[in-house]
Length: 174
Image (cartoon, rainbow, N blue to C red; front, side, top):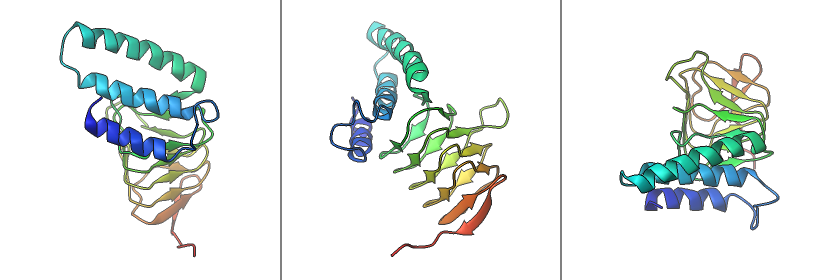
């Protein structure tokens, strides 16, 4: 595994409890996502072709069993955390910064069938069933409430809630 990908995986793993494999199955989807990224970096040849076939087979099986779809083409920083796995779909061209947190039912996708996708900065937290749709940018330290639908850019340090999402400045909790 490439050192950059290994470092990101270690950051992902650090956000989970000590032995998450059976208690938090979302770690399996994240691990497979990181494996897929390492396959893309392999030298061309029969070993890479074989690994790609294995990757896609297991990817689709995990997608059905876990309900989490993170294609290997997604650009995600380290520290990705998924709570309450299930019904999580991320567009193949989406970008996620470091330490993003997703909860069940989250969609990070597009409104139209094209290559445009959301770009989330560092420390973005998405509540259950939040939908981030379109070619939009989400700033750092943004919190998006449960069942919110975000259709436009959000500046850093904001909280978004509702359908369509309205913005409030985030408050520091002491």
